[in-house]
Length: 171
Image 1 (cartoon, rainbow, N blue to C red):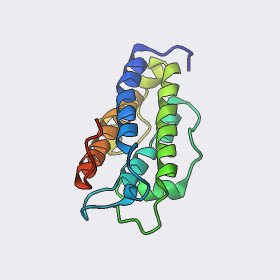
Image 2: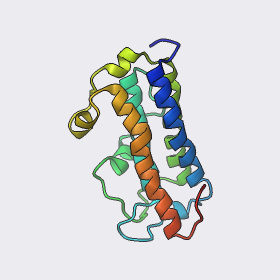
Image 3: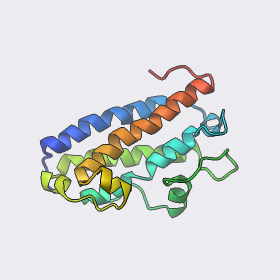
Image 4: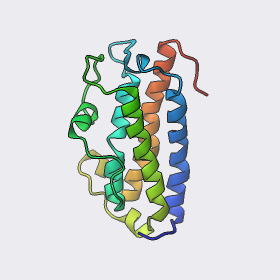
């Protein structure tokens, strides 16, 4: 890794900073008690959405050759990994503070790591397997997708959830 990012890394950083800011804003007035509410049985609550998004930064950091942002936590990842169904809070989900700290620390660390990533790193084959590699064949494509499109998909769920529980738009 170098000390100067490239146009590609800077472009990803600029685009990824917006979902992070939006994610903070969406969660800012949600109480810990509300964070786990399911106003409809098929609607993911914010705890699940943010917890799911918090699973991916360490994977992205590994792809970028950077240190993990938060300690690995297999139990946390098992609650929120792809394919797991959101359920009403029954004690299994961590608090808003724990989830948001992990989400924010991870995404901020990826933004910081991108400051020092060469194009050569971004052009490498995505080490993931299956659908993610098919959709995003390079590390750059994978990081861009996970930090931007993937994040906004789940933040859109939080935005809809806000309306369902009677909260105003965040922006």
